[in-house]
Length: 83
Image (cartoon, rainbow, N blue to C red; front, top):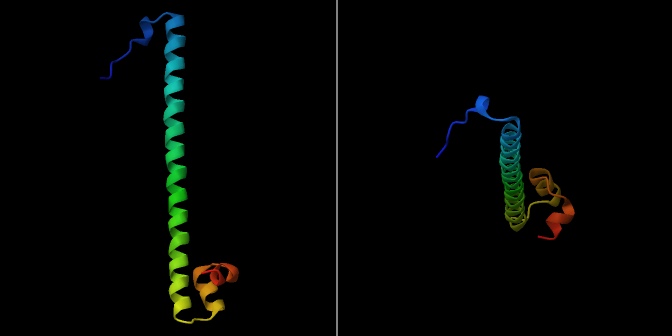
């Protein structure tokens, strides 16, 4: 449960400890938020790459020219040849 804090009634030492605990908490929240955002972005990038590979496989199965597959998917010809 959240409690309100009477900052005015704190001694300077109590205020310093309080400020430090708030700083530590905010740093923790920022770290978690930043890490979660980076992991989300990484997942998005990996998902797009998998989708491009699947499209390239389908196009290759239809005997489409390598240059066309590369242009449509953005994959390199070497990546497409390895599929």
